[in-house]
Image (spheres, rainbow, N blue to C red):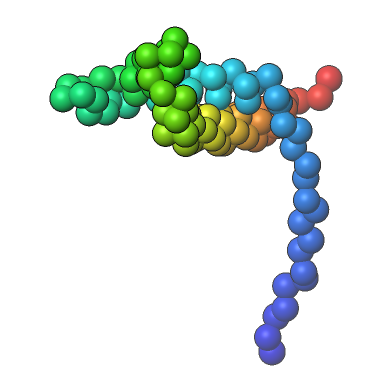
Length: 108
């Protein structure tokens, strides 16, 4: 005779996104990516953030054509999206850890 285990139901649990934590972690990731990633620029290596900001400054001051914004925009948008995704994932991990910690606290 085959024993059948009762069907276990797992109720979904909603976790609340902590937007302030997501923002702070994303901001830190934004700066970290900009300060860690090196690119080849004009025959030398430069930090990603420095090269983007320098190029953006040249466009805004009029030393570079406005068309350069179409070249800078994908890099800047990609940088923001990656930082936001990293921030959201790390924030979600913190929320999961904090919810476990709150569940394991003895009630008074």
